[in-house]
Length: 132
Image (cartoon, rainbow, N blue to C red; front, side):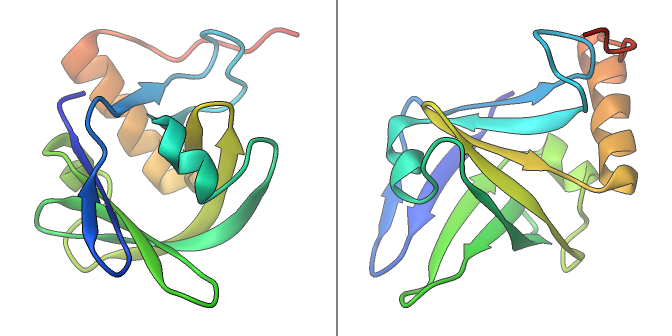
């Protein structure tokens, strides 16, 4: 997806070459449709094989993930398609997990359905039944 990814704490840093994509259920071992954001710097926020429930808010540009801790950090994803997942001002608290080279967002059912609709409509990818 065509997205701009920014990391904001004391200052704002654009994560150039960051990749954002919808990982649709049934493809490449995905058991549930989720959003992947890949950039090595993200493992400083959330190491691989860890995760936590975080607040995610829709904005006029996309979504913002608030990382909790001693210092507030935000991951800003500016992306037209993500405005269809969470409207500006809409909030959810959901699982954000670390993986090698990035993070993933395990949205709730309502947002998963919107991601799957985007994947189908924009990219022609339909969810498949996951098989172990």
